[in-house]
Length: 452
Image (cartoon, rainbow, N blue to C red; front, side):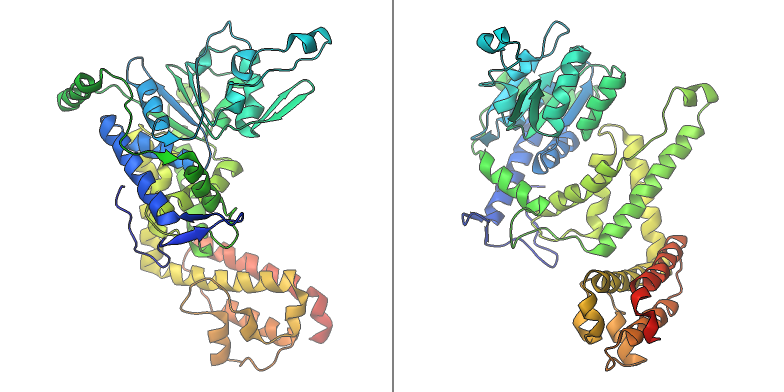
């Protein structure tokens, strides 16, 4: 992914300015990130997908869990990725059952302890580190894992009366096994990205691994060029929409189609689970994509677009969401997600549903604006032009039919209802969307019923 592509409506060019007035050359940052990603992919043999997954996690400030048998290079992978950045502190630890939370949060201050208060000296701990690597994380006891939950999720140390904001950006955890309990289930939810790394038995890849070992004896190496941590944070803020005047955009039709693909994938995963023998199904929970993960899909979609040198996400970026929604390294999950995307893509292309979706969403945007700003009820319809790209907008349709001179609420309702009725959905999803819009029209114009 090292080549920065400039296709699309809004390629990243020149300088972007942050809210604090400091300027960044965003195109240069993207080149640096792609070069770093490619350097690690060349250094860590046959782990391209996992490396890309970790970089996406870092671009949105999330954590990664790596699972594999011993000796497949999880530590080397994490160390090499963290070494690609400068200006960031890295905390490393190998978990064990004997450890207490102070291993991660810093030792307890004795003077405070005498007063009955648990206060950690956080200097040099995970709390004050931007990156963290926890090896054999499930060897830690549940008491310690529970203490880590708020640090990983809220980025805050909460221990007794002590509350300290944490600098943690991304933690990579490694394990040889999964230990399931109430606490570890909550911990797994903190690791949005998961990968299963298989040992390489292919002779060609073993040869490539041997070559790398002979060069560096299995150690992480200093790259010829590093990415400054502040640039990573800047890209992360751009993706999240935290920079005033600069953002990676996702049009409503892409968002809607993305959610359709995710839902289809979730249904197909559960269908496969229920087709298992009864005993196997009883040991497996239903597959569930949480609202948090669904929302984070948008961040990942924007991160994918940015790595391709664009400030707008495209429909073609959606297949890459398997890096978030599937466990990297499990080919069956990735293939199922790809089939979900391709099935819906073909259905919508053949039936003309994409144009219908865009038309319905432009009406939804118009109704939303009317609902949130009632003063628009008395303004001409031309002032309600939406941002959803469509060949058949509400305003264009209105000009061809009832005209747009009348600025009354009654006229707007007639236009909205007529426009909606002119659309004949070709999929069940769009029929449902149309039904929702029919209800929205009633709600939006409820206060203006006296004018009809």
